[in-house]
Image (cartoon, rainbow, N blue to C red):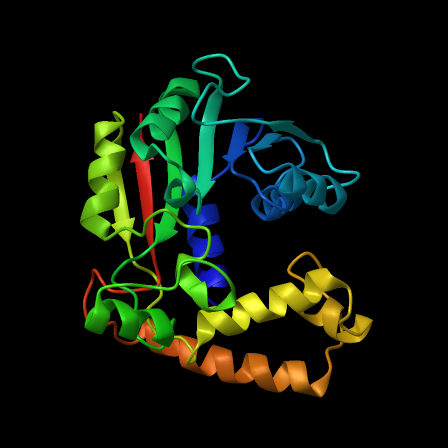
Amino acid sequence: MALKRRARLILTSIDPKQGETILEVGCGDGYYLHMLSNIDSSLKLFGTDYDKRGLAAAKGNLAGKNVKLSFGDLMKKLPFKSNTFDKIIMSEVAEHLPGDIKGLKEVYRILKKGGILCLTVPNHNYPIFWDPVNWVLEHIFGTHVKSGFWAGLWNMHIRLYTPDQIASVVKKAGFKIQDIQTPTFWTIPFGHNITHLGARILHSGKMPKIYADSINKFKSPTQKPLLTKVYFWIVNLVDKLNDIWIPHQDWGVGVFIKAIK
């Protein structure tokens, strides 16, 4: 349910207004653009990504929607003029960049003065039950799994961030931070690994359609299999703890920042 909380926080904070021009940097499969297109059809939506496979997936998921997609490399120059966008979403991207400050300076360039950036990154202060294997390896042996299924939270990531670390990066890029949160602490054990496994099976095309549709974030089936219902009931029950008590404000599975140019 970390994605649900993250998405809700991003969409609430981005607060789209009629006719605004909004970009998602590192749009991946186009999930946030999909959500925004359902909120207001007058929005001018753009998505860019360095991963061509992600762009191909986004093109399919956003078919029929008025969203412009393009290839973009934050380490060079994005295909947009300076001061183009009212608002920008950059979710789970900075941890992949060889130069995170350089990438954020490029985002700063294309955002209008007074524009909003909503950014999320994985939190290095993650709870043990989110990724038990790497938590134990890091805290006892000072290492982590670097690739493959058991890489978990570290998979394809150059770095993770504490809230203070990502706040420093955002400020060095020129932004003023308006809000910083760690919205999700409590998850089911091995939550990240289970999510990753589900995504792998879903994208392989081997999952029965009734189950695939029931966990596909782009679909809202009216009926779900009993197994899916039970799983989400358990997940939602655990997730409610996040509204009751989080042990420390810097602990959680991710960090959210709202910043202003």
